[in-house]
Length: 244
Length: 317
Image: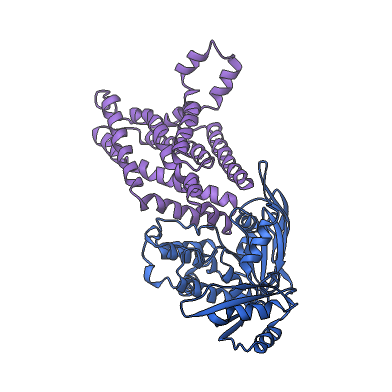
């Protein structure tokens, strides 16, 4: 675990070594604020909660999370440093987990900086802070899912743009499968069983129930399995590249 | 002498291309193995497989008795590896990078500091400690890579072109460093520079199109050269004709090559020994009988570059 954290610490520091971290955080906060207040009618709703905030969050993540993960492996491969990393006494799972944890920590920092929202609703009214906390938990979970997808796909290429596009596309697929709009649209074309299976592996439904404050063990197990699967895929992909 | 590095029938295919074909070699403690070959011969690929970065298609390697496929972590703990091109994290400073490598290698507290300092001392990085690595010259980057490989004082060193991009003084320093460490370690270096092989390697392995074509000491390789034991004499230009005629009468000589007349009015003649035998005595006698006293006379040990060309081009034809 110690080695994992050493890997993670370097990776996290790398975000802040370039302007990437600051650009990301500013864009994330500005866009989230704009969506919540302008599109989500934060004030006009007359309710002291963060529902619009958490509704828009996954869609913003869809665009921004791949930007966090795209460099994780692609940049190592482009610069050749992957050869250094993998010839140090670091086990594959430690490298994979360390990078994932660093990206997750970074996403958590960006998310934590939305705290003025929480203060605002608490000043304006008396929200259910338990639900808000659950919302943040849900946000961290869906971020972790997107990060795990993005990290694995970053290992498939040495081009960061390709890594970004792939991750956005795959995250999008896992997100929209659950949405009623898409389900309705596909209902005629796709057998009901397939649609049901797709809905079960979709992220958005489970995310919404967590952010409503319904934290079911079933959903937590799903998220853990989903993340675990993509981290495993990540290790397999890196290993396959080693085999040439 | 126990073998510390053993490669056994290493083979690497990239699709239909066979990059490395059945390469076996062993290196014992105290040996410095020079790994030679033209670009694309499979040097780096072989080293990557021994270091555990690439998985061989067939065969395996053992370091200090640990199999690189079965126990990669044990191998990596004992190995100092400078990958091709000396990759390092460009946005880190030199100290931050070395400190991180030391942390990954499990060193803590004061030992970590002393390890990092020792590596910095060995590679003379004092002046650039707080520079981001991306701001450094090629030579410094290479030395950071070298410092990283030496940090844990490993038993086995695999260095892919350790002196590439260094100026002659730095090359000399690195060679001195390798020679000084050699008695304690088993070392493989790859290089294009043949004089480096003669200077620091106890053995040379020549590889061409993925196969080992020679495995011998540099001296043994030099003996294969037709220039082995060739005698070159420098005489006055007016005596060149007579000297050449006298030498050509000698049975034991292969060819006698007459050089161009130099600006100093001297001319060099090279007499190649037919079987690589020593011919200095007969050459001196032959010249003395025609009354020529050479200004200079020297004996060649053989030309590695020529042997290298012969070995690596032979199959291509």
